[in-house]
Each structure stands twice: as structure tokens, then as C-alpha cells.
Amino acid sequence: MSNPLTDPTSDPTSGSGSGSGSGSGKSSGVRAGSASGSPAGSPRTSPGVSPGGGDHLDISRRRLLGTVGAAGAAGLVIGAAGGAGIAAAVSEDGSAAGAAGPGALTSVGATQVAFHGRHQPGITTPLQSRGHLVAFDLAPGAGRKEAAALLRRWSATARTLMAGKAPAGDTGIALDAGPSSLTVTFGFGRTFFDRTGLASRRPSQLDPLPAFSSDAVDPKRSEGDLWVQIGADDALVAFHALRALQKDAGDAARVRWQMNGFNRSAGATARPTTARNLMGQVDGTNNPKPTDPDFDRRIFVPAGAAGAQEWMAGGSYAVVRRIRMLLDDWDQLSQEGQERVIGRRKADGAPLSGGSETTPLDLNKTGPDGKLLVPDNAHARISAPEQNGGAAMLRRPFSFHDGIGADGTPDAGLLFVCWQADPLRGFVPVQRKLDRGDALSKFVRHESSGLFAVPGGAPEGEYVGQRLLEA
Image (cartoon, rainbow, N blue to C red; front, side, top):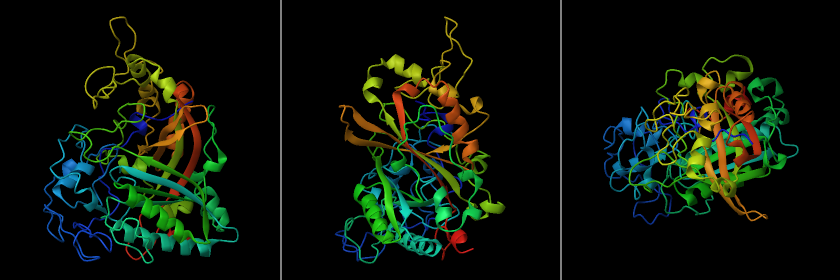
């Protein structure tokens, strides 16, 4: 099997220069009925933040530009200096940025991400500790009118929940919680355009992904008319959003598939570090960074895009894959064997060619025996941008564990989500290369797949997708 799991063209970013919102600079109140002592709907001011302004945070923008496993400070409203524990991990150059301040765990709930902005939240937002991916199909008979009404409802609910407030008719699932870095991201699948009579406005970037030789894709857990990504730093807050959006769907759409994921929790390590996947590998090293001069060009559809892409300005294309890790087979390898499969040291993620985690791979360096230090079939080598014509994607995954299979092996692995301006210049060339000889392939299995057009962020007063559905 082939898989873009752990290296340069497919790993989590370490910053967000372009941002996914326009954070207001103040902390959000907890939901109605909170036991915090604050009146329902009133703002809760946390230490290190003055109400109404983001200039008094006891944390530098530089620390925010890196995060455990993913990226992006823009659009965040940090509720306390200690809230940096979620966002800070590595600095702009990828190096460790220092330990989170005191109170990182207690301030997790106060961090808010803005709903409105040039890009949707959940793309360059710091990777959260809990996530849900869910696809919907429009109900029989539902068309463009019903889809527009649904996206209007969903956008209103997402905006309310992301502000740490309770929507009308709330279930009370997250009654006492703050926003907890909640993000909700919406996308459209290829079939959405046929169901809504908008086939002429379907971008060519949504053409079906090619088949890969080792895929074992289940169609019932793949694709979909609509896709929603939910992330939060609290499990109840994430589930609350999932439940609210499912209820909002009403008779207009029904769930096609749903997947649940997780990452390391804020404050779990003595200092901010790059995340590890379920194979124990440091996973998130050489992702494109928003400080890179070509970051926006690689990840987002540019403003002024013509033709069928006009409505996608500021948007991105998400490739979503459920990648099962064959952990029992993997664990039979020695640590040295695992490192040679990946091309990096397990302890710290440094390349086998030497240096630290952020040292560039030296693909030509040999050892005393004359053999390449980074093997010719190592995952890090095959997925490197220089080996794929510069192809790159912004990787923002969640791990998953869905119990033990009938064969007694863990049903666990990676909910792989990557972002790019064009899948044919991001995911596809890298995956084709991996498909032909990645040493990691025999330890993973791709079991579901989806490709979704994720439009730009909604301006104030608009809902996500309005420029497509009401043009």
C-alpha cells in the first residue's frame, strides 16, 4: 500500500500567515447555563488578555506561528497567556519554541477561532485534539434551493458554536464549556453539482482521483455531496457541534459516513513538540509554512480565478483518506528497521542523513559502507518535494482507533486530510510516486477516499458557499 503519512509534501504545517479568520482579540463567554459564574452569553476575560484587544496577549505572534501537528495563529482569540499551550510548538523556522506557560490546561476552553475570514477555519488553524469528519448526501428531491437553506443554517450554527455560545434549541451537551478552539469547515463533493443543477460550475480540480494499485477503498465510506470537518480541543465541544449540524440537516440531507479522530491533548508534553502518529513516528516535520513565499499559491485558489473556479477564490481542495495502519506488522520491525522505512530517527524525527528534526534531508549522503543513509525506498525520500517536481500539500490529519477487528488486529490509523490549490499538483503526483515503491506501503491500507472543494471563508453577513449557490 502507498501512503503520504509522515514527510515533507504531506505533513502538518507549522504556521499560518494567511489565517482563516479575523480574530477579534477577546476571549469568548461560556455557553448559556455555565457554572463558571459568568452570565449567559457574557464575555469571559482570562488572564493576559484585555477585553476587546488582542495586543496585550502574553504570547508573541512568533510562538503562535507553530503548533503541535498543524498550523496557524491567524483567526485565533487566545483566552489566556497559558492558552499558548495549544497553539505554540515550533517557531517559523520549525524549531522548538519553548514550553507552554502556566495554566495551559485550564485555559484550553477559552481559545476562540473566528468563523468569518478570507479562508475557512480549520485549514491553517492549529490542529486540535479532537475531530470529526462527516459526509452528507442531499436527500432525494433536494436541490439548489434546499442546499442553500442548509448551508445558511449550518453557517449560522457554526458561527454561534465557535463563539462559545449555544444555538437555539440547544441540547446542552457542552453547557459549561468555552469555544475550545472549535472550527467547522464545509466542502462540496463532485456529485453535489449534479444534484443542484450546477454542473457547469464544477471545477476540473474535482475530477475523480486516479485509482492507485493498492487501494482497498470502500465506496460506502467515500466521497459524498457535502463534507464537514469539525475540530476542537474538547471532546464534548466537538461532539456538540457534530450533533447540532446533524440536527440542522433535517430533511435536506442525510449522513453518508462519519469518522472520529484525535491528536495529542494540549499540555500533555513538558514542552511543545511535533505530534506523533500511532506508529510512534514524529509526524509533521516539513509541511509548507505560511511564511513560505509560495504558500498561498500552493494551498489556496487565488483571488480572480476565472471560469468554474471563480466562486472558489480563497478556497482549497481537501483530499480525505482513511488510512489503516497495520500496527501488529509494524511493531515486529526493530526500531532501526522502522527508521529505515521512514528515513528519519524515531526519537526526534531527525533525518538519517544527520542533524535535527528540521535539518533538510541530504538525499545523496552515504555512510562508511557507501550506501545511502536515507534508503532509496524510504518514505521521506519518495515523498520529498524535490523528488516530485516540487509538489506539496498542507497536511492536517487526525489519528483514529475504532476498536479491534474480527481478526484481532487494531482498527486504527490516520484520518488523512491534505489541502492544496489543485490536487493534480499536490496529492496526486506524490501518491503516484509512493504507489510505485514506498517502503511504508506494506504497513498501511487506504480504506476510504474523498475529494472536496472547500470554498473561501464567508464574509460578514454571508454564509459559506453563498457565491456558488446564489450566483
